[in-house]
Image 1 (tube, rainbow, N blue to C red):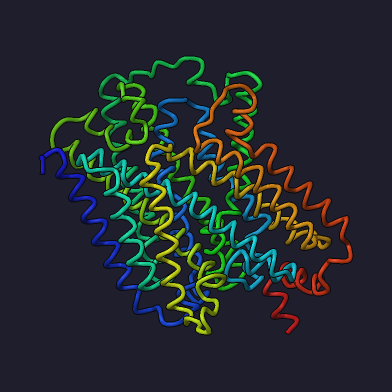
Image 2: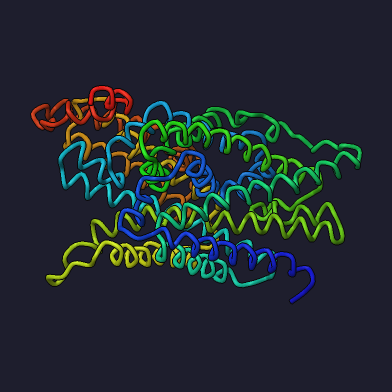
Length: 500
């Protein structure tokens, strides 16, 4: 082991030990199937908000934003703005009604709202697809990080993250993961705040040089004409509306005791994310000033401390950001594994096979192995997909599918199973084609590549239009219990108690 690699190796080891220790401590609170799925709906708002911050601030947030700002400039600030503002949309439209639905998962909500097993099956497929699409870049980011700090093969990082995540998820489920993710949020915030503060002091001591701001780098909106503006607004739409459709975000609101706690949680999350996202752009701008290599943008946060500082201080800061990066991979991967496992255990693994049915906890554990193994294989086979890019595509798919279903399902009584199915398929085929186009590397230039590279601006309106149109054409299929369920979704708990 070289001395240069020592801080990173120590950081990864400490984060791994801390994660497993906290997960093991949380295990003693996990007893029932409800503990594994939703922590028995007993997580208070502040703890839940920290846990959401821990799982939501992924590799794309910790590493990707700084790299995008380094290479593409100020217009990439729309990523953190959109990822934060998505919780404002979620707060206003979804958070409390979704908790009051009493569901465990998004497919549970769809079935309760529309009374359709086929809609449930389609939603389960979408949850698994989005979860895997989001989980793959977390594993890739771990491979990039370990390769950067110790020169390890790119498969080592995914293996380590997969093993640690499976250990926590299968041992204690949502109970254990909640404590782990809350700890990891504050670790990630510290791992960016402290180095950023030190590096800004170094920058000021060097005379506060300014970055070489070309026109393309400094504009907050794209300067590439109509195509550039389309990409910017499509990205904004995907990030604003995609948050509510992410399976690992939705499942955390089911862990709140009631709708009021869900709203309180969302408010605290907005503050936590706003604080965190102040710092990745600082690394991007400093990297521009100090000549960081744009070809290794995804490792800028890790490499910048040593680029600006020699000696022990640079090593300590490097170790700290490596710890934060590794915590990002673990926390987001854990949340995604929980969400995907919950769906797989209910709709696949937990079904009777050969006349036998696994109990709830065993089915959840088997599903967790499947949930992590598939994206692990994909991450090893496709190691060069950009971290932030892959996450952006996951947001586009979520915005084009679950966003219309949740908004219309909560706020429009005339939604039917036929309309929901048609809209989900339209949004998924549209955004899914864009994902396949991008991951396949089929870039031909011109408007086709632009429209498929960032599909939300057309795939989201398409999904809404098809869902509404299909429902209006099938008015007889509005479920009989719709009015009763909508009253339940929109009645505050205090009013329910007063009426009782």
